Length: 179
Length: 124
Image (cartoon, rainbow over all chains, first blue to last red; front, side, top):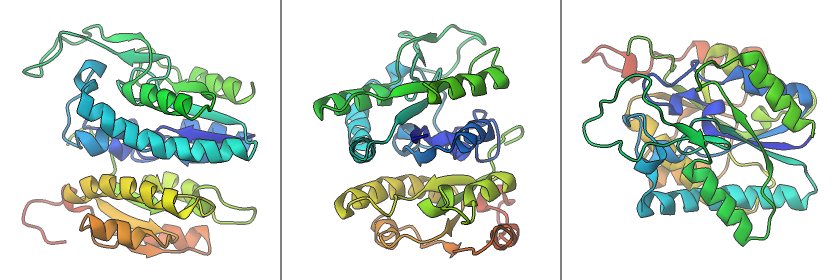
């Protein structure tokens, strides 16, 4: 067991915008696995909530890839890096749990569409998923690099993705915790 | 907000209720069961300066929920929270430091509907 730094919305789906929440509050499938494995939970901040707010539109990473938003992410990432450095110094095993498909919190899959902008209309099913990290995860990686701290292994929760399977999602999380 | 799964209820939750010690109250489990969102407060063993910065970030997020009429409560205590919320002019929330899970359940059940869900003109 160790310390799992979790995306904010895994404990608080209220940080999602309209239509984005899977459940009223806590995303139980993630917490169940962490609890069963005896891992400590530490919640990260939601970069989108504080910057673009609760009335934000669904977005892709290009819409968050601005100098001002990256500075915002750097500030939040510094707080998370502080916590990771303390736990690492304590000899804790650390895992970062992000949200696949998120323009901010994706760890292996993010959302991208360089042409998206203007009046918020795009066809249902418009392609946007791509390999890569969200903006906040990128800034956290850079901050940890600056401090000489190795980037933790990651697990990405898949519930926002098409074809999501909860059992597979939990199995994926378990396999990362067990590494 | 038809089809919106959010509960519009937020519990600022002390670390000891998210990561309870042996025999402690699992606040996270109760809040999950009751459909509340959790915003975890900094661990007690973090240095003061770091805790202040984290609380400032938390307060900024809480302000957004407060502005939109979400119900916000405090589970447990954190000494720095009052100052951080005062900086962003968010009222200190009603709270409880429950000794049992049932105590917490009763507290949550007694909460009024969030302002954001009330018909326009209905008082808090």
